[in-house]
Every structure is written in structure tokens, then in C-alpha cells.
Image (tube, rainbow, N blue to C red):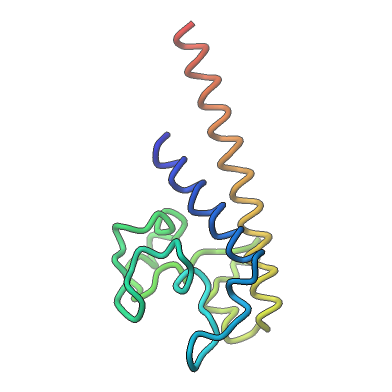
Length: 126
């Protein structure tokens, strides 16, 4: 359950960062990169992804774990769009809206899962 709580906290922080405009402004000479340029990313800016230290890796398909920046390969919707594909096909507004929808959906699913697990533990203990 601790891992779920960690994931929930990171995703809630991401949603807050997104909704407060964190991705609207360029970082030096380029647009801000989703996840990579947020406060929840455990890597140092401009360095390689630390893989094991990032809870977002739990959402990356196994076949994409080897990528230099695995969080770009998280499927964000039913059609399987990822940040990697959206960076070449979508506008910043489309990317941020897709991310927002994924965050809200995933947070809700994790909250429901956590609640169901708590109920199961209570029933088992009682």
C-alpha cells in the first residue's frame, strides 16, 4: 500500500503542477517537458533518468523500460498515445489536456484501489 500512496502523491503533485501552469512556460530555449521538468521528477535536470527511483516507471509498459526517458512512453489514453507520440503530433494545449485526463483517471483508479484494499484488510482483521 505504501507504493500506491507514493504513486498517488506523485500524481496529485503532477496534477497540481499542471493546473498551476507549470508546463506553460519554456525552460530556457525549449518548451517544458511533461514529467521531466516537474518537481516530482527524481533526476537532476539535464541528466539521465534514474529509472528505479521514479514511481512513474510503474505506468511504463515493460517493453519501454529500456528507453532513455521511459515516462515518455506511458500510454495516456485508449488509443495508446504517449508523450513521445504527442510531442510530434499535438499542440501544447492538446498534450496538457491529454495529461490532465490521464492524471484524473489514474488518480481515481488508485484511490478506488486503495479504498478497496483498506476494506479488505478491515474485513480480514475483524
